[in-house]
Image 1 (cartoon, helix red, strand yellow):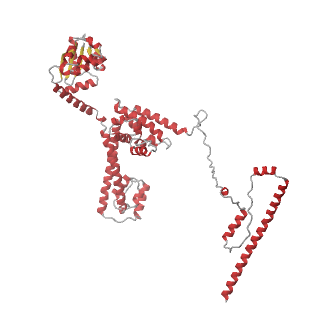
Image 2 (tube, helix red, strand yellow; image 1 turned 180 degrees about the vertical axis):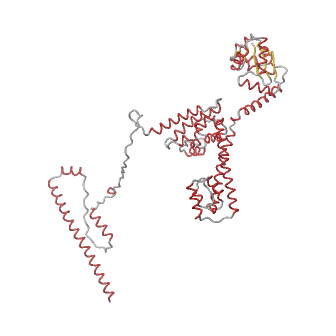
Image 3 (cartoon, one colour; image 1 turned 45 degrees about the vertical axis):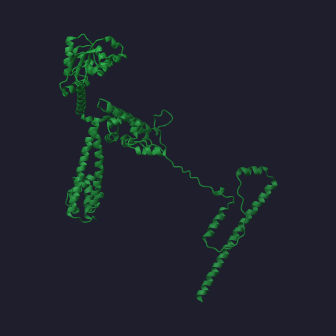
Length: 533
């Protein structure tokens, strides 16, 4: 049996001396404890050294992709010419299939072969003669650096550092642009304050200021390419009756320069957004389909890289960006937040407040799968993201329609919405149970209110007996069955007396009012007599 062994310095072909020892896989490592023991198991037959790092890099990349490089093909042809009947032990089964197909060599890959490769790698310095250890380590380090550099050059789209920088710059541009526009509106507002209310769009405002300059030039300038006809008419009308102050030409020039800066930054921001959108579709297409370019870029920026984000579970992705609220809730023992940066995704935004928590949880679960597929998968298509988004949208429709559907029946037919009728159930407070003093009649209360309105001199009145409260109907029915006829007569007499007393009370009150009126008339006469005297 022959063994193909790859190193950073070159390819080596070993001859297995004792094949019976390969059958004992568990104890094979004991045969490679020392170089002397290793030389009794395998023996170096041929070693093909790489000329430089470029050749080593080409061979390494070919092995990674499962292809046969030029140097490897050259060695295998020599082996096939001399010992075609021997089996070739290899470490990669995919490479073995390619060798068998092209060179017609029988290849073998098994756990015993893997253990044999491990033993050879452990005693490589003693088995490969004419190659100093220092040279092997230097070539290994050089090949590692070259291979990493080649991978970066080969797939520059997979560098997520550009996304982190682009989204940070985009946020900074938005803040600065907002400050510049606010300063421009405030500055030019001293000269032409009405323009800010008429033209609401920031870009249109800055372009209009650039074109007209002083407000006296509005009448002779054509703004049809910047503003609609209606707004243009309003601007010209407002310029005629403007209440702004007069400014110098130097002030207008400075304001125009600021407007130029705003327009340039706005155009650069649009260009940067397009760049970020294309970069996100190249690096994380599935995540972009799920949550959008800006939210996906902010998630990657918050985690540090796409690979770090792929290591987070779905629960962490859900609240990523709300760490302060989370720790505050844990400290105060209140409800933890349901969403962080993922709240700005379109799927969460279009749901009702009741279902936002459910949708954000489901979206985080699917987004974490998409992130891992983008970070660790070899494909660069967005099929999985499109499929998962369709599932989430179907679930969202189901949640939104759940409250409208009927509970009974098949559940598929929509419930008929009845006409809404507001029924107010306002319960009034009953103050009768607060006091044990018997309440007076409504007629008496009305008379007291009228007396309170008129300022009257106090008059002594006879104390009245309070009326008895009406007894409940059920108690009255029981009492009637138990009472004797004598008691019934007494009750009737009391009722008649009460009825007779009511008109007397009314007569007394009328007499009191007449007396007060007579006193008032006498006072008026005395006052007139004194004035005449």
